[in-house]
Image (cartoon, rainbow, N blue to C red; front, side, top):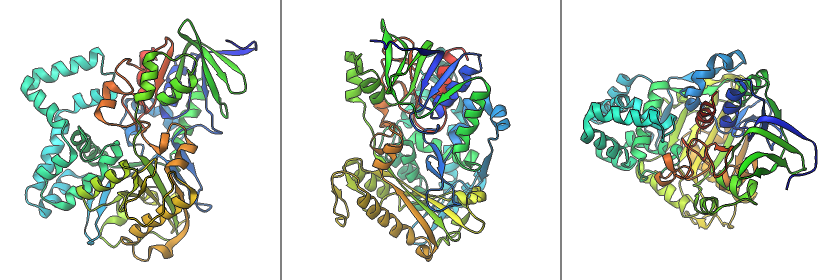
Length: 529
C-alpha cells in the first residue's frame, strides 16, 4: 500500500553507497539521468572508510584498504581521468607482499619477475622456473580470465571468448586448463614448490579470496593473486581509502546526482511485480521512473526490503545463501617503524605471519568450526610505508587482519580463553591480546612502540556495515557453488532479480567481493551508460 504523501521522483534510485553503488551512480548520471543515492549511515562509502581510530594524527583504513582490483578494473579505465581531476591519487610499492616465519626466515615479493625467480631458485632448485611457468600460464589465458571476472557470464562476449579459446588451444587443451584451475591451492603449492617458505608466501593469500587452501578453484585464484601482485605491486589511496569514495561522490554530484545520508530504506514499492520506488523508515517516499538498484546482501534485499513480496524463489535464496567466516581487525599507532626480526620486511606493504599451508588450513578449519584459532593467519599491512602522511613523521601504522575468525563461537582452540557464544568487548580484547603476542615474536620490543590500539571483532564490523553479515568481509561464502553464475543464484543474471526494474549489485553478486566496482559497472553498461 502506497503512503498518501508527497514524493520525489528520479529516474534511478540506488540503495547503498559502496563502490559498486557509486560506480553505477556515476555512470548513470553521466547519461544525463536523474539519480538518487541513499545511504543509511552518516556518510557514504560502505567499506571505504578512514578514521583516526587509535590516537589523533594517525589515519587508519577500516574494513578495506587495497584498491588494486579497482585500479585494474574496467570501471577505473573508464573514469580514471575524471577521478584524478577530483583529487584521487594512489601510492605504490614495488614490494607488495612478504612472509615472516618464527624461525627468523622471510621472503619478499617484488614486481620484477626475473628477480623473484632467481630468489625462488636459490631457495629450491626449479622453484623459480616453476614460478615463471605459472605466471606465464595466467598471461596466456589473460583474455579468458578477464572476461570471466569482469563481464556477464551469460552473454555473447563471454561465449565468443570461450569459443576463441577452444579454437586456439583445442577442446582438450582448454578443458585441461579449466580443470587445473578448479584444483586446490594446497595441491598447486605442494606439488610444484619444494621450498616451504615459498609455500608460506602464497598460502595465506587464498584467504583474501574468501577461500581455504582446500577450496575448489583456489588454485586459479591463488595464482591470479600472485600474478596481480607481481604485475602491479601494492596500491593504497593517498590519504586513506575514503578518498576514493569522496572522489566518486564529487564526480557524481558534478554530473547532477543527488545523495541523501542517514536515510534508512524500509521497503521497496512494487506494483504489478515492478519496482516503482522506495519508502524510508520515517515514511518518506521516493519514486523511480526506470529502476531501483540495491547494493545489499540477498538477506537484506529479499527478507527485509521485499519482506511483503517474497516468492518461492526468493525465499529459497534467502534460506540457502551462505555467509563465510568472520574478519577480525587490529589497528596500531606506533611511536616508530617496527623493527622486524626477519630481513627485508621493513619495505614490504603486507607481511603475512604464517608457517605454511598446514598452518593456514588449521586456522581456517578452526574458524569454520566456530573456534577461536590457536594461531590465526595474520596479515600485517604497513600503510606508512606507502603513504607516510597518514601518521606523524617518524611514526608508523600497522593493521592486522585475520580472515579466519568465527562468526558464532563454540570455544577456543587453544583452550585458554573462556568463550561466550557471541563476540563481546572483553572477548575481542582477549583475542587481540593473542594476536599481539604473535606479532611481538616477529618485531623487536614491539610493545614498547605502541601508542594506541583499536580492535574490531566480526560483530563490530557488522554493526558498522550491515552487509558484513556475521563479520563476513565478502558478503557471502565464495565457494564455487556460490560464485560465478551462481552468485547469488543461477536464476538471474546482469543484476536482475525476481521483479522487473529492480536490480541487485554488490559483493553478493557476480563477480563477487573486492573493491573493483565491476558489478555496478556491468549493470550501468547494460542500462546504456
